Image (tube, rainbow, N blue to C red; front, side, top):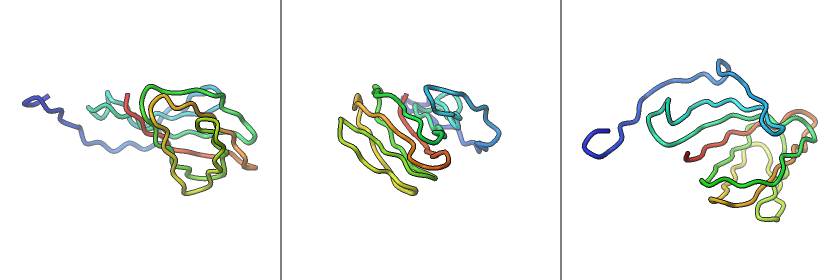
Amino acid sequence: MRNGTQTLMNSVVHAAEQPTYAVVGTLLQFVSTPERNGGNLSVMRGGIPPRTIIPLHSHASPEVFYVLEGVMEVFQQDEPVLSIENTQLIHSRNARNSQISMSAKSAYKSRTNKS
């Protein structure tokens, strides 16, 4: 902290070098964490295997999803949205959501949220 403001650290992180964790059907890599970037953002890369359902859930912070590859059906506040490669979805704080991978191969997404 400098004069009441937070100083962000510059860094280059290679996602392929980060460990992968299995979390509720998703394979997650934590590309950047608040501890790493000196801020309050988390950036994750996740793979959802074919026909996998991520159960209905919510988060206390907003989330931005960007579908890198594949097709997902996303339910946000009980409304289905088809999310295909190169599309972005935003979940507001506490918004109930779930995802289903509709691809023959894993759907990959990137997620950013405030911690």
